[in-house]
Image (cartoon, rainbow, N blue to C red; front, top):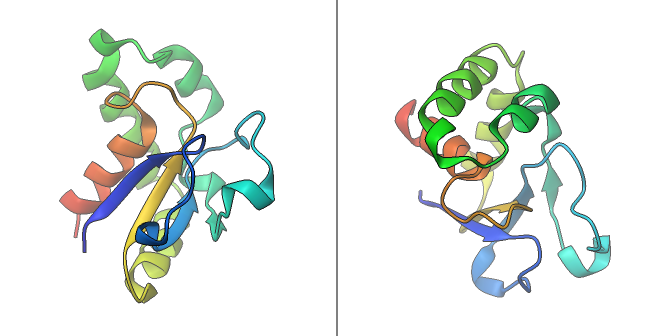
Length: 118
């Protein structure tokens, strides 16, 4: 099953299916009712230290992914819980993220990690 990506600031759609917030922090200025998040998987988000180091700088993307994937490998079950939610979804799954950066963000890396390790 393909995992879709969508910014938290974009309106939810029926096509989103199961909406999973994959951020450590709730997106600023977005109400819970407006976001229509079905699950929030904080533990699968990058650590605060890694997120700050990366700062969405494209030149750091390969190293960010390497470090983030290591964090995911050591996540203590967060990835397994996320996989279980994805596998039990009856339709599409959308990772919801807060970044303005649409290409170099943790949700993109998380999707790559999950799709590569299935």
